[in-house]
Length: 401
Image 1 (tube, rainbow, N blue to C red):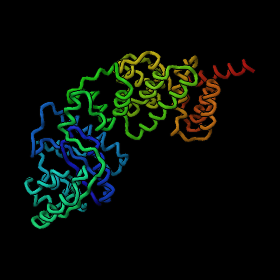
Image 2: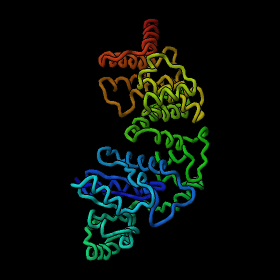
Image 3: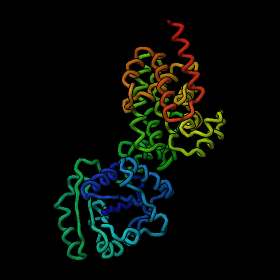
């Protein structure tokens, strides 16, 4: 097994870290990559305003998750748990004991690679792990790497791999923190990481969460879900916007509802219930027991109380899973957008997509029927609100005929 170790303060992790991790997995053929946030770096002091370790750990987790390689890329809190100065030699020794048969690789940037001989116990590190240095600019190439690679091989018997990442925008963490405090810097970050920073007011940011523009709202939403869910949220947003334009609804409200509709998707049953109880959301007995139903209710709570969304948006989120009788235009749009967005692939979805732009109530009836049939086939209990919504639309259909 090949295991890569990528340490650092991750203060904050940015797109340069992400690309380095992605490239290392491919070039080295890693079976696992561990992102390891430092407790106290030995080579520099943590600057004033550095977030608590739990925040840096969570931002590293969001970065790892964004690679969509959950079986390969993970976050390790080994240095945070150990506490004190985070000497890499101790981390490598600890991981070697944990994975005695593994082939370890230590990943590092250009500056760290060029000063490796000044690290704490470089001989120990080189004896237990190969070194992989990556440059983030065209200048960090062979002319710079070769002399140091030869020196480390001669002095420590180090096995060195060097990688250049051309085209990656390079920025120091120091400069990035300054930009964030000035109200910019988002382009250097994953949206989910940027959203996490805004949600928690890190690095001198002071976002008014109840008055966010669409890009910031997306970032906050993405920070609350797993990366694999983001494609669905994006698809739902774009589909909702198209349906809003077709049927005369407010496109911005449709987008805001879609952006937030799954923001609590990954909470536990207990977390859902705690949120709903905290904000006084009414739940029936079935909803109190089924996580799949609860995320619509708890999501509406977050939309209303954390992000200050209007009642129309919150109610659309509240009913996007079960539906109900007497749905508003925006409620119907979100229900259908969630059901038929481009990433959905099931029998009948193409017909549902066609119908949604020709006969909205006809599409709603079809969606209700398909949902009920799916629940029956899975042996799941069908929510009464879904049946009521279906029956109402059946009645309207019979009236037309």
